[in-house]
Image (cartoon, rainbow, N blue to C red; front, side, top):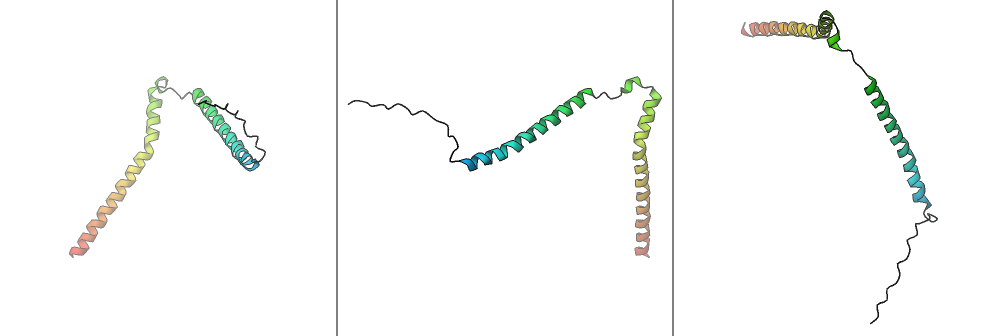
Length: 105
């Protein structure tokens, strides 16, 4: 018994002659995706350069009064809000007392 081995056929890439729809479809997807990826990489580059070059003020180099003034200005909205909450709470307590008085009377 003699073994006949046939040589493997060479793989020839498809030239796309009869398959133009999928080729055009691939190009339609490929071009915008490459453009969007390029824009993303440009954004990453700009963000990196901005973050490397950003140098905030060093609070240790400022005098003590400037730091305390900055803390006061940043806390003043919170203080106003807490005063407003106290007023609302006081009004609510007055209404509760009034409603209790009316319901008991």
